Amino acid sequence: MRFNSVFVAVSILLVTPRVLAVPALKSIQTYNGETSGKYIVELKPSVSRAEWIRKLKLSDSDTIEWDVINGFAAHLSEAALNDLRASDDVLNIAEDGFPVASGSSISTEPNDVHASIDLIRTGVPTYASGTPGPGIVTQTNAPWGLSRITQRQKLNTSNAEPLNFKYTYDNSAAGEGVDVFLLDSGVWGQHLDFESRSRFGANTHDPGFGGSYGYFSGGTHVGGVVGGRRLGVAKKVTLITVNVFSMNREGTVREGSLVNIISGFDFVFKNATARGRPAVAHLQSMRGKAQGFAASIPLDNAAANLVAKGIHVVIGSGDEGVDLSKSESPSPARVPTVITVGATDINDARAGFSNHGPLIDIFAPGDLIWTANNPSWDRYEDPSYPQWGTSMASAHVAGAIAYLISKDGNISPAAMQQKLKDLSVKNVISGLPAGTANNLLQLGSA
Ligand SMILES: *[C@@H]1O[C@H](CO)[C@@H](O)[C@H](O)[C@H]1NC(C)=O
Ligand SMILES: *[C@@H]1O[C@H](CO)[C@@H](O)[C@H](O)[C@H]1NC(C)=O
Image (tube, rainbow, N blue to C red; front, side, top):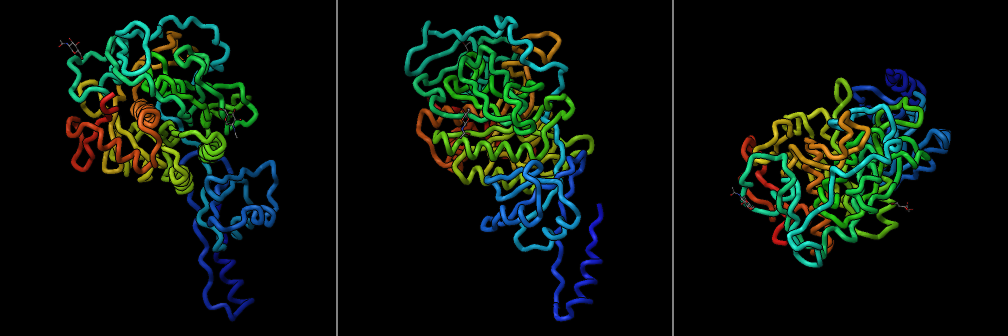
C-alpha cells in the first residue's frame, strides 16, 4: 500500500497558508514476509488508547488492546493510518506478520489425541540417596546439560546420548514458588515429566481454544528442560503455557503473528501481576517466514517493558549461525535487558547453529538435549527425543533463574542477568568469534 503523503502536504499548503511546517508523517515499519493485514500501533505511555480507538471507529471484535505496551492492533484504513502517522501521540506503527518458531515442524494431528500413549521410556529420576529428601541431592540419571551447569570442569565424555549423568542440586529450592511462562507452541501438559506442574495460561492466536496444547512440540521441549522431573533443571517449578504459535481450530492459520506474541507478553504481564509470584518468561526463538523479517520495535518494547515490571525475560539467540545483529529475527533477543542465550555442545564448543556476537549474554547446553516431547511430533512416537537449538540453551537458563530465585530469593532482572554472568565459567567455550562474551551457565554451589 502506498500512502498519499504528497496529497496531504499539498492540501495543507493550499488551505492553511499560515502553517509553516508540514508535519512529517511517521513511516510504517513493513514486515518482510507474510503479513496478517493488521497493524500494530504503539502510543506514548500518557496517551489515551480508548480515545484513539473511538476516534478511529475501530470495531471491538477486530481490535486487540495491550497494557504491556500502550498499544493496539487492528485492520486500519488508509485514512486511519494517515491520522496516526501524523499524530504526536504515536510512537510507532508496524505491519503485523508471521514469524516461525525456530526448529518447529508441523504435525497433522492435535497432541491431545495421543494422550494415552505409553510414557515409560522417559522414565523416573533416580537418586544416589534413593528417595530425595530436602537439601542437597544427586540425581544419577540426568541428561548431560544438567551435569554441565553444575560442574565447572568440562565433562569427561563426548557422548551426549546416555541419560546417566549426575545432577547435584538443592532439592529444598528446585524452582518451588516460581512461575515460568512458556511463550511457545503449547505444552503437552499430560507428559509425566511435568507431573502436575503444567498449567494452561492462554492461547493468544486463538482465544477460546483453551483445550489445545498445540500442534508443535517446541513448548514441550522447552518445558522439559526448564522443569521436567527427570529431564529438567528446576524440578518443582510451575510451568504456564502461553500458546503464541501453532494452528487455530480450523487448522488454517499455522503460526502466531507478532500480534500474538505481544499478546502473549501482555498475558504474562497481567497474569504475573495477579499471581504475585516471581515470574520468568521464556520465548521460543523465531525466524522469519520465507524472506525473514526485520527487527520489530513494538515486540522489542513489549519485552523491555515486561523486564521493567520485574519479570525475567529469556530467549535463545537464534539458530542461524550468524552474529545476532545480522539475524533475520533479532527481536526481542537484541533487547539489552532481555537475557539472550547461545548454545554449546557437550565438548564446550559453540554449536554451529548458534548465533553469536556482543548481543548475547550467556551460553548454555543446547545441542543433543534429551527432553520431553509431544507424542504426535515424530514418527517414532517417542515421548523423549534429543533436541537442538538455542531455545534448548535458553530453557536451561530459564530453569536456572527459577532455581536461583527459589534458593536465594528474587532480585531485579538486571541483578539476575549480572548474577548469571558472575556465576558462569569464563573462557571455556571454543568457536566464539572475538567480541562474544565467553560465559557458560553455572548454577553455582548447590
Ligand atoms: C567422569 O566423571 C564422573 C563424575 O562426574 C565420574 O563418575 C566418572 O568416573 C568419570 N569417568 C572417567 C572416565 O573419568
Ligand atoms: C493466570 O493463569 C492461571 C493459569 O495458570 C489462571 O488459572 C488464572 O486465572 C490466570 N489469572 C489471570 C488474572 O489471568
